[in-house]
Image 1 (cartoon, rainbow, N blue to C red):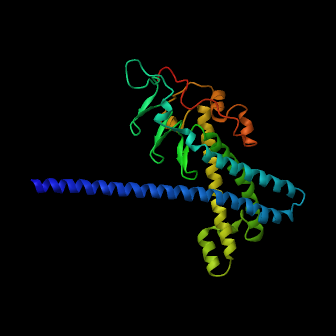
Image 2: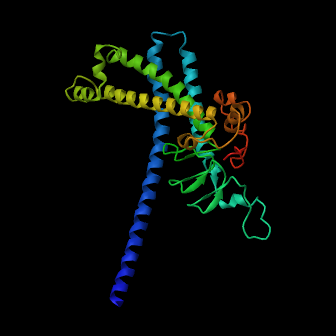
Image 3: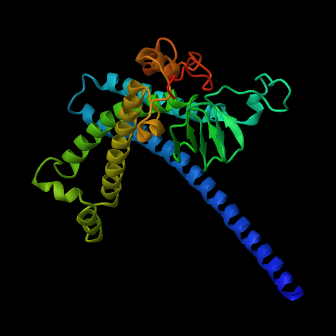
Length: 308
């Protein structure tokens, strides 16, 4: 019996070590994915900008010389808007985190040792604390996030109350800049490689492109441009999806979780919800980065529906 007890203890110990090993390597993998995601976004956005400035716009200037300066200035403007809002997502990521430290401002309930929280708050079983409405736990960040929408690996953080507006504007600039640069890239490839909207569109299929390079019919640089074209289309499509999805949720006065659960937690008008995301004069955010125009509210107190 004593031997069996020692065996059980040893098995439990080994199991605990195994779980710790898996958890540690999982965190390492997540950190690596975050790093790759952030680096990819910065490199891709910069590559699009540099390709515009040094390749496609100078090429188009041969055909349309009159508006080349305007397009160059517009390229700089879009690039600054994209990078600035991307960095603001990262800068404000931790502001949306909710922890027990933020409960210190709440009054204590008389005669007890725990703090009084509003009745519409719920308990997070992972953090073992009471959290505000619309706050959800992120298993990747391992923290509760105010008004969590989703975890984004390309920004290495959750999109929540304090960085949602920068994510939306980043997606908006991704649509504008992506469409703008995509048109120029297709124009360049149609003129120098093969007409895109024609019977020769098969030349843009990656298997054909790889074989063309192997047999010397195309150059390696043309293959890289075609790969970049597909990445460009994918990123522009993703930006379009996220922008319109986020705006759809705002106009419905919901988070992604609430939409999937078919619930409406808060009672706000569309105008109030827009200001809670973008702040006052919210349209200005889409023209120029204005981080000093803060969104309204604190992400903890919401005008909740009475029947919930």
